[in-house]
Length: 64
Image (cartoon, rainbow, N blue to C red):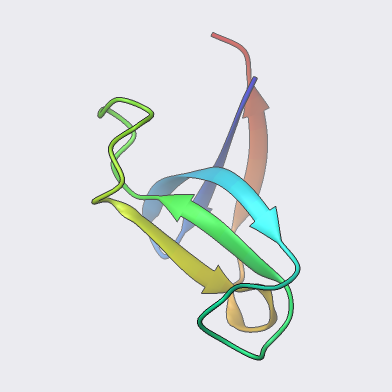
């Protein structure tokens, strides 16, 4: 199952959520992948975003 969301007129894949990350004291983060066409293991298009300032237009789960 893949979770896809719309974020600022772009479609992103929600990879994982994490309460703490090593690079910040802030809590609650989400890892998003901006390029949906690449393989799952390509990390160059991934970015950690803080949940407190990130708002998705919608979130849906898809089965491929």
